[in-house]
Length: 118
Image: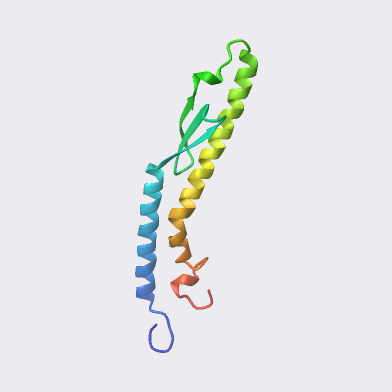
């Protein structure tokens, strides 16, 4: 703080810039990260990136019942949705794990920047 109890604006701006750079770096890292989710004991695997975009779906041929194609299609659709849900949860957990230390530095808001009244 400056004399008189006032915050040093230059230091605050530098800290904010460093945090923005860290945030951008983590966003790039997460965008390049892929996580998988499975359903049906591994019959369906969904891969999503750190931005929750589905990048790949793999369906094990064992999931297909040639005797009952209609039921198989419905079952596979359910398994695909479950696998995507599982994978996006994993991606969200990863994002929270990676971003947690940075957001904690914000003090749950802008309070970590040392702004009075925040």
